[in-house]
Image (cartoon, helix red, strand yellow):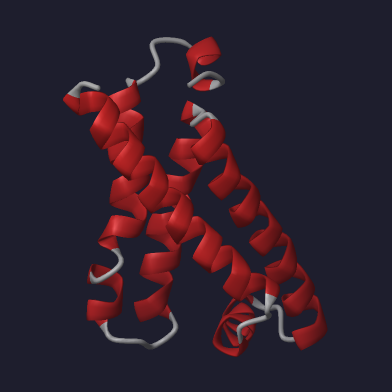
Length: 128
């Protein structure tokens, strides 16, 4: 197995673990995360919990997908989502270091995307 394949496998496992963990927390309706929705105008905890549940399902599905076949568009979404959820910490009042600490949440899927290869056309975004 060459180095790129080993690095790709390590990143796939790391990204899957991150998204599986976040997905499970979301399915459990992590209290702090439910409360964050109010910052964006969703103050009904029931609605926030349902949205969080749907996001949790998406995160878990992406965790499985990255293990089975990492698709470029999914990896781009994971990098964006990892960046957004990390950036959300200081937005909701947590220290900036909670953002810095989570750089791997977006860096790992982005690195995996770059190892697989940045797509040259739209069709390649849908392949791995």
